[in-house]
Length: 259
Length: 316
Image (cartoon, rainbow over all chains, first blue to last red; front, top):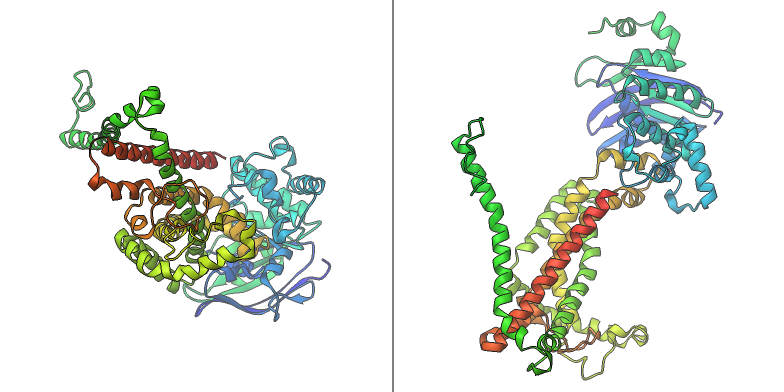
């Protein structure tokens, strides 16, 4: 992917409730963008609109345009299934498929849509994806064991391997390390830095140090109060957001003087 | 009982309520075994005359062959229940998936209730419905199956014209009624299992670009497989033991034919016992009870297999 993700005036609704209001931002290709903000500010909801996953919840819909590689994913006739093949997602809690082995988990997305892959091709995809997720050395001798037997951090890297196995253009991560211990968190953060070479990454995090460590740009979301829609307050270089934010709310939040 | 009496060496005080509760629950647990054993012993004791008189057990001196007697009944029972299962499982899984994953909530709840209500219909009512209404309605379909070109090489729908005759009170008609009867239990258990699939796993599949059907195939069905198997076995158990509906729908006979459209060729153990027991005494009664023992053992084995399948797939 060479073109940026362009988001213009995006509103997200759950039924009558407006959860995210008028977000516009441009995300550069092969960069890491962090979304921070207090709980309930709409950052996860916003993230899920970037691959149309919010539509899984009954009654949820979005208005506005999101252009990925020049194509508006909310354009008429765009199939959300195809959007999700181009925009992968890693969730808060590691969620490998419990009925599948490690190798089958990695191949799960590849085998969708009745795509046939030869044995050699499959082995190749498994190794490349697991190496890409820094997991290969740890699991290469037990690829046929269930994925549920791995540690939490390993499971999360398995989920990343599963996501990159389908070669998406963008990888979305929704608090990918919040359920993990510090060592596993570090492993995920290192991995994010490496994945940047090949993918555009958008990550939601509650951990501001994490945002500062991994991201090139940071967006700060906030709400005026409960029941009001979340808004993008400030979006700038990570350095600027954390050291000299333009907005008072951002400054209060990143310096811990929030609320 | 030693388990309930307070031990003198035990220093922790045993409270009265605890003791009562413990003895109640242990007693109830043991009661199950006692009941099962009592049924088994009754069947064995009462069928002993027939077993002793049989040629297989006692050599040439016996009066009749117990295997020859019970063989066609076992065959008919397994055939009818098996056919019912083949028809019911795909439909039940379909309904369960519809309720758990496809139907809007407004529709899913009433459909769930309707399916549960189906389980509350007494079997004699199913028998009436099957015998009076369904059999004539099925006749054109059966004739079509019997006369279609497909039947030339598919033996199950074959049979002479004398056998395949109206009214079509054959084993397939009985199996259709049985299928309707076991549908609710299979649907209800499958639906519960499908609803337990972790939301996170479903989202993971969707986020990989799965369509709804692909999500169901990769996540929901593998997760629910052992549940569907045990649900089917529960249904099979019910179909094997069903008496009234089969008695009222199927014209009985005692052959080994696989021609499921042929009338008057099959009987099931349960319906045979129900039909014969009023007029049976002595050795005949003993034979009937032996047939009951065989049914008991078959159901036992089916349950055993179901447990084995469930535990094998949950270990993986």
